[in-house]
Length: 431
Image (cartoon, rainbow, N blue to C red; front, side, top):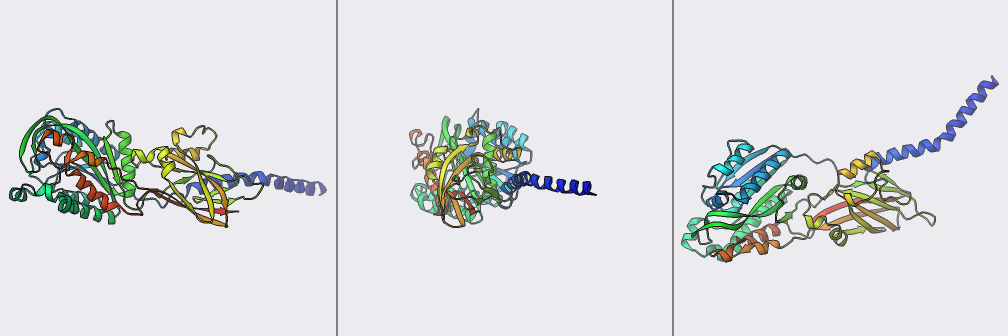
């Protein structure tokens, strides 16, 4: 009987001695699970469809004659978009018309079939109809020369109406359409390209001129709900071999709100990751200042806004009841040695493009709320792509009539003090 009691007692002692090791293992596992749970907000709906629109008014005809960069670029964009999500092709001049064939047939048509045969169209009406197809979980893509113009009848009555009234009437019509989209949480990205142009060009007075290989701009707009737009842009940019000459993003919905709080990368001090928050922070004279890192996917932002130096200089970090310092900004590929991190954390890293590391210099209360924002800064490259007199080659080469007023209308529709590329929030909690 004594032997049995001793054995049970010894087993109990051995079990107690093992508890610290088991507890640490459980905490690690819990930390990994907690870090990856709601650091990302509730999962957003996924993309269901892509509607691809080619403007086919007569002014587009010169892009489709001969060997032009336009045909190469548009063929690649529609084909690569179709790899992201099956594409429905439309042509649009007055009203959208569904293209009868599939994407491959459409690409062939760009090379062999006269498509740009429609009458001139008002651009704000085109944007309205394209935007209507971007509601719900859909993306709309529009290819257009983006020339602002009044209807032909108005130009006949007053040949100067386009030049005199583009900055007021036409710009505000564009503003109205995009302000409506913005209210619905729909953003827009414009990609700017150039191509040779062979055929009839219509000046702002509707006078015909024949061009042979003259370099002309054209634009590809991507329009959709903000969470869909960022992801689609990121995927498309990865797939394209021909990058746009310029790009501008008009975001709706307050910016990127999702992130992953990492649980070992660049970690210093004693703390735990739980539900996207930094918790159980040990503080005191003997405690090492806590440092932590978050991973974010900035692939949907314009190239300049992804640069490490740009982010360091423009990220706006605020913490109530704490002093928080941005230690470093690194692209994932510049992070350094990651051999020792877990498979789960590597998955989180691979799903993001950048790692932001922070240091908690001091915390004045048990809980502190943190916000990390990157305000939108609209580039103004479009002013160099704009002209108000396109009657001569020197006046229009590589420029689009009244493009500055079109882009100003869009910019004003999205411009606000609360317009951010990034808008993250999380908490710091003491032990």
